[in-house]
Length: 222
Figure (spheres, rainbow, N blue to C red):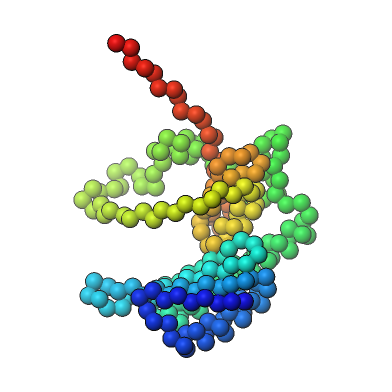
């Protein structure tokens, strides 16, 4: 397996490269079909220009979905250890789910009669949540809790990905592999834009958008 290391704001030492090569053997054992492990090391500075922390991001590329993990620590070697542990755990979990799926036979499937997703622990969002998402009124802050005086602008990180058709079960697997709390996809059963998300414990939820054409604009007649 090839390793590719990039340093941003930091020089990658030969010692760090040697440690990466040693850790990469562990990943190659867990993912024999992996082709490349990308490692990005980033050093951030505080306002006084002093080192504050170092981030190690791992991206495993091969035949199959991309697997990611990252960690932020004062020392890049510690961050590497934590990120490797996260990546290894996600690979083990994915392997265990594949073995369970083989033992169960048929996995998640869409029941046309009831419209339910069977074979996976996914709970559809409530009608109220869907209505709030559609109207843009959903909020994680209760009314009256936000104080305008304490408001701080937040830079929103934007990304764009190509649409992928898959089942909810496959979307959950992909979400776990990248370590996110949600995953966007196109439901292969309904062709609807959908998202799976993490709930409490090991439960997951799913939300699908019903695409409705906007009402035609009315012309004003003088």
